[in-house]
Length: 302
Image (cartoon, rainbow, N blue to C red; front, side, top):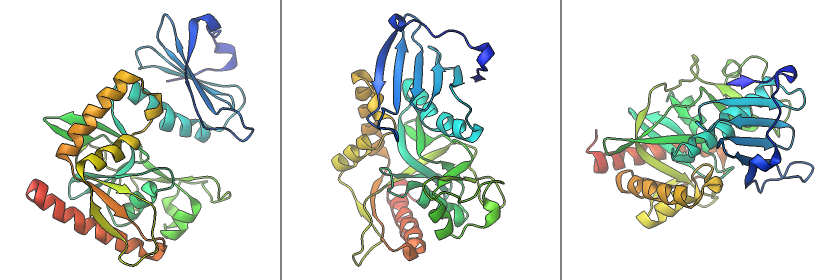
């Protein structure tokens, strides 16, 4: 990693040496495209530029990142981009399949909570952390295959949570890093892991189950967990891989084969949570009970 000061900056390559490789469909507050990614030729590196002036230069070897800021920016804000979308893009470029998910440790195995933005991935992971389970990753779950099984790699020791989520889960004040405060309900706050109040899983764990979070319901009989047909499970995972919009055709084909093997070996379950937040403890119990059943059926209780 390198953070370029103004006096250290090298000139950007001529426009003729770059090709626009990706344009985000997300707009910033001014209505401008939030992210562009250019690919360099002949070196093969990448330049990720955010509309607010933050730029990340990624080497062709995908081992070096240079950070540049057009204007002064808080270190925490830079870290949020670097440890989230930028590293997510690097993983995808390296051929690592990543789920848009959070993951926790349950009975010595990894369990992933998959879903779209707002589905409750981080909230569910925080719920398990509150119950004493270690967290492996938040928002991006990187997978690797070892001896015909899938494992989840640990990420960074924090959870990004909305202030109302922290209040809802009744997290103690010392669970937040010093200086963090719910001053703006539109901004997520970083909850530190690896403390006395919350655990962080620092070693990779075998993935034993995936729970896809759908829209919350107000009907009776929720929260509940249902089975997925394998084809449905596959398509849900295809739709919920991280950074899938940057993939070209060969990368998409590789990902599809990986996810096909994943759905053959790992149970994929459908979670319908209740709209009422008072049912969070019951949601935890329902998932744990379901995991005990599928583990017995799939893995013989091991």
